Structure formats: C-alpha cells, structure tokens
Image (cartoon, rainbow, N blue to C red; front, top):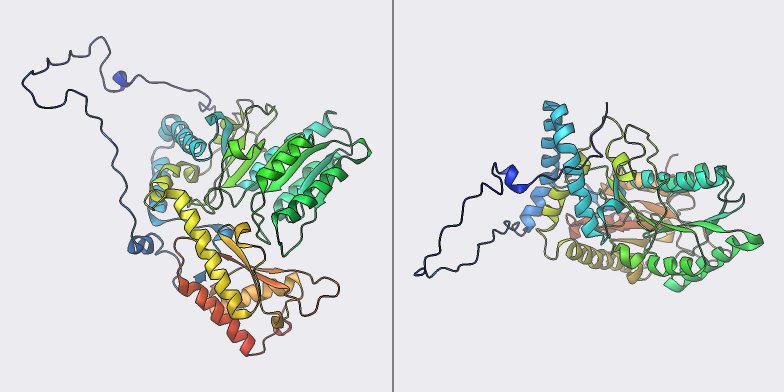
Length: 469
C-alpha cells in the first residue's frame, strides 16, 4: 500500500472555517460609549481538574487489588482514561481504516512527536522518532554502526564501550550488530553496591583508555541513564562530556527508564542518540518509545529495521509506517499529557514525589531488615535497590527468580530480586537485593506487605534451597 505519511499539508485557517481572507467580513465599528475593553478576547483551553486520591484509585482500579505491585519498572502502568482513549482510536481504525490512514494517522503521530520534542527540550521535531520500545531504538542505532564496519568506514577492531549492567536485550543487540561486524566490545565494570558517582566515572575513563589502545578508535559509547538490574542512576551528562573530550565518535544513551523517572533534557545531556520508553514511567499503554537523533549527527543512514514503503524518507517517517499494525499507543500521548498535568507540578512533580517516596520506603525496609541500600539516595530514581536479609540464602540468579515467584504466589508481592555474587573474603554478605519501585498508584501498605512477608520468611528460617527448581 503506497503511503502518504511523508507529505505535509498546511491548511489555511480561514479555509478550514469555510471563508477566505478576501471574503472576511469587516469588523464592526467600535462603540465609543462602550465600557468594555477593545482588546480581542483570547480563549484559553480549559485546564484539567487536579486529581484527587479517589481519582487516582479510579484511574488504576483495573489493577489487581490483591497484589502489592511495587514493580512499576518492568512494565509500567496506564490509567483508565488513557486506556479508554486508546480503545476509541482502535475502534475508529477498525470502523474505516482507509479514512484513518489517509486523514488522521499522520497528523496524530506528528502531534505526539511535537509533545515529546517539547518535553525533552529537543531543537526540532525531525529529531524525534516514535518506535515500539527502547530495544527497537537500540537496533536502529547499532545497525548504523554495523554498516560502518561492513562498508569500510570503520576498521576491524574499532571499539564500542558499554556498561556491564547494560540491559540484557541491548547486550544481545551489541553482539548481533557490532561484534558480528568486527567491532571490539568493552564492558565497563561497575561496582555494586555503588558508593559514589566517582566510582562510575573512574571505571568509565579506564574503559575508554582500553578502547583506544593499539590505535583503535572508539566508534560508539552506549550509556544507560538508569540501569535496570541493579538499578542505579548513571551520571550521563558527565559521561557524555568525557566521551566528547576523548574523541568518541557517537554516543547513545539507553534510557528505557528515562522520561518520567529522571530529568531528560537533550540540550543538557548532549548525546547523539537518546531513547526512552513511554510505557514505563510516562503512563502510555505498551508499547511505545521515542528515539532522539541530534540533527548535527550524520544520521542519513539511520533506518528502521523493518523496511516498508517509507524507506528513504527519513527515520521519523519510516518509523511512522512499518506496515499494518496497531499504532494507537503512539497516538494517545496527548491524552497521557492531559492526565499527567492533573498532578501538581506535572511530570516533574510526579518524578520528585516518586523519588522521595521510594527512598523513604527503601529506608524503612532496610531498617526493618538490618541491611542497606544498593546506592546513595541521590543515585536512585523512582526505583531503589534494597538489601535482603542474608539468611534467605540467595546464592544464584536462579534463587533470585525462585524467591520472586514465591513472593508472588505465596504473599501476593510483585518485586524483582537481584543476585550479587559475594566478593572474596566477605563474611555474611548481602547477596540478594529487591528492586523496589514507586509510582502514583502505590500505597504505603504495599511496602508494609513486602516487609512483613520477608519478616515471616526470616521467622520461619526459610532458605532458598527449600524452593523447588
């Protein structure tokens, strides 16, 4: 099906109203005796009503009330008002798909891109593409790097640097695109628990030095904004600055947990590429993300990995049509922003309150268990790593997964568990950490339920060895 998404139509406002400039009626003469202002009245759009606690309960009443859902970081959440708007869009498509395709899809996607552009402080809407998720965005960037090796612009053995705690799917993409193309991949070892930003900065500098050994060039740095497991907020602005000083060709920030969770400002961060999911901390339905590509970057070779009719019309247009599919998650961004603006301070207010709440809940838990946080509070986002009692006997990734399942099935607590291998010589180390999230729908009772479940396990002398494989 031939697409019209790459065409732009500017319609004259008078024409849309059924009049022309030449035919516009002359203004009525002013009444010199009138006491009313002669200035035209500007109609301001109605402001959304501030949301109440009962309103939040209503918006998330579709959540299972029996579950202490302290794992927003994995799949996010979507309020009922946005789900309703999405369903209406899906129905409109199904009622008359040709009309929707030719007359609505383009303008609605552009509207969403413009909102994102303003939220992230990008210079131009052309810098913003909408894709399914951060994994898709990573494939777009890494595919371009792979072509650089294949076409001889990069030399075999030129390096790409990424954090050891990079998301697993992104690590697989690096393997599939860069390692297979002849690139040399360097992982930045990061300590955990983390005590300071400086620990990360120093390890990153060492990795860049290794990347430049033997005459190599560092062609790409992949930097997480917030690592997934373990969850730590990374000092991206400082790492990007170091990359520029060290001559790294291109910088890609993988911020799956970005917008709505940490500060996201493209001018301040200064990366060439930045991606963030919108369905994790920005209340969109799954799945939708944006990929920012700085205009000054030579990005004409950036293409969506699913090739369709729009190939060659620019990444944003290519991504807006990759064949017949459900695009509704991309179209509800305006409705999501309306929901967010019902909260005091908008997205910044939500982010600040979530951070403060999750730190408070994390500190309550470690006090109850006699453990510690995985990083200082200032390096937490809306997630915090909370040490679990050592007596639980978490001794492998498999133990962590089994304990997570047991907490879900037995205690109705949904929380990811991370296993940290003990260091040589450690005595009674904390090897298990819970990644605890806080979002607007959470209540203090959710965290008390988790606390009490672990306390019960400790009281019962529970050990992960007792769980079946």
